[in-house]
Picture 1 (cartoon, rainbow, N blue to C red):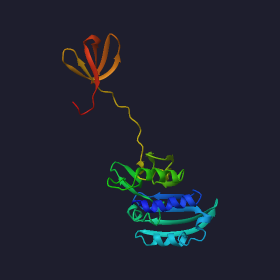
Picture 2: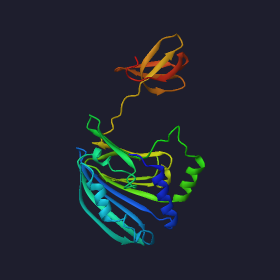
Picture 3: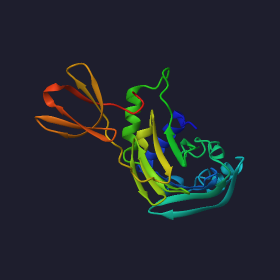
Picture 4: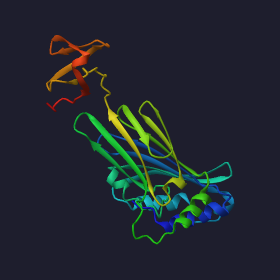
Length: 265
């Protein structure tokens, strides 16, 4: 799903004339089979959308109802902190269904998501915002810089709940916090203007860390090599554990000590 520059510019205009205030919140609950539920909420200044019939709960319901695989549960409108909020909650059969949401109709939802079974008991979830820069794009760098300055500190908030433990979560941009099976991601709109940023989450059972032996390759001055684990090294000698046997080597006989990986021998 790609965020079109024309639509983005329209929202930047809204930001400028709407006192620079636009908010988007998303709560996503994902199941192991890729289905789940989503809540999307948009907040715009009251004075800007008070009489705007295109910014209504009925409009967002219609936009979502037309998408195969998505079932609208509820929609509502409310006012908070001088903003008019439009909120929708829905269920989806798969992330592929969510990918059919058009960013020009629901611009906060400006990205794509993937949920991959790694086959080893772990899963990888990826949420990508923005679009890849095009090599033949006519967009000028100064135009992008201007748009980034216009949006200022406008952040989009994402709250994602997973069906299993989180092993790791990271993003190239924004603030990422994990609590239990939940990830909260706050990313600036400026970060995705003219480029992409992504959230990557590894899920599954986190196995206990097992200390593996350190493997060394001791190159001797006579041209021979000893493979083992260096367990002691002094100015005079080096003690190496080779299989289950200790070997003592004089330091003057050693040319170099290097690491090697299993399978390299």
